[in-house]
Image 1 (tube, rainbow, N blue to C red):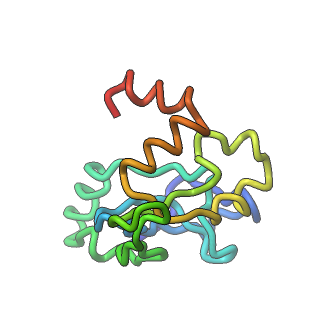
Image 2 (cartoon, rainbow, N blue to C red):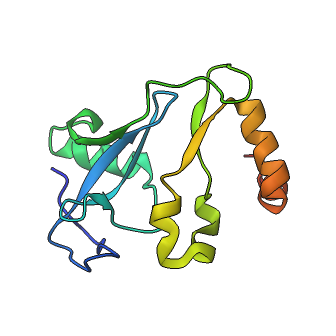
Image 3 (cartoon, rainbow, N blue to C red):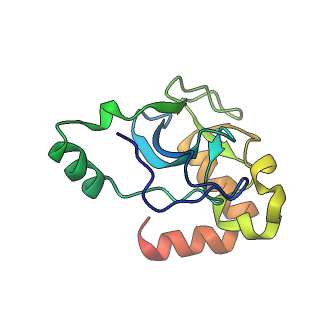
Length: 141
C-alpha cells in the first residue's frame, strides 16, 4: 500500500522514501499525492494531486480502499472565514499556480494562509490573481 511508482522528492531527490498519502480538505473531501517520508513534505512542488479513479481501481484490485491510505494532513475541522465568520476553507497566500514565481521558497510560502468562505475566496482571487480567476471562469471551474 502506498508504494512509490514514479515520484522523486524535489528536496532530497530520493524515490525510496516517497509514498502515496492522503490529505483531507476542509470540506471533508480528500486529495492524493506523493509524500516524502524522509522530508515530511509533499514530494512535488507544486503538489500534483493525483486522479482518484485509477488509484481506487488499483486499490480495489489489492482488496484495499482509499481509507487505507494514511492521512498526513487533515483540514476537516474548518475554521470560520477570517472576514465574515461564515464556514471557511483554508486558503494559501501563495497559490499553486504561481509556485514557479516563488522558486525554491514556495514550500515556505504555501503554508501561510487563512480560512475564507467561498465568496471571500473568489474575491481574493479576483483582486490578487485576476488572470487566474478569469481563466477558472472560462474553464467553468
